[in-house]
Image (cartoon, rainbow, N blue to C red; front, side, top):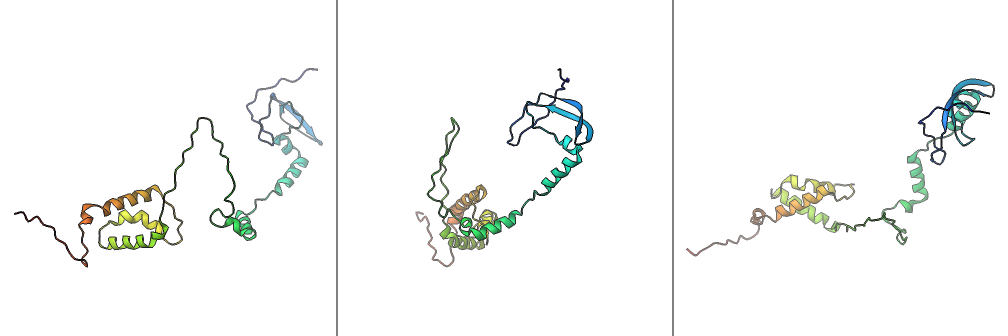
Length: 202
């Protein structure tokens, strides 16, 4: 019976599952659907259920039903859903693991990939007030510069989630070095007795 000559096409067509569909080629043809005639491109495939958006737009009847279907698709408010779920399942949104602490997890690694275990940093939350008071005292005595304790001050603000960052870690190490330096170890407390060490060999 013969067949029309097909043009090559680079169009990519996917099905509802996201899989690529094979396209043999395309051709220009006259389209007649439900009494409506127009011209457009037809893409030849091994399937019999493919219909393009160009064809649908050319037919007012099909276009109407398509718009009616898409008009019903609404994006629900994420905030509203979150608030609703918090009311129904308050325990799920609590801090910590809660009851989800006995589930076994099986991690699948790629071949030749070696997992690394990094222990969490031990952060003494109970010493927070004492450390803050000591930092204030040393800052008032100008023992430590404000720029050294700056990144650590952010951790002590109200309603701030504790997050140990590389910047905070560096400030902590610099602060330890400053406090253990010779200059600070020689800094005396005027309220304490002064012990003088002198070389009396001469």
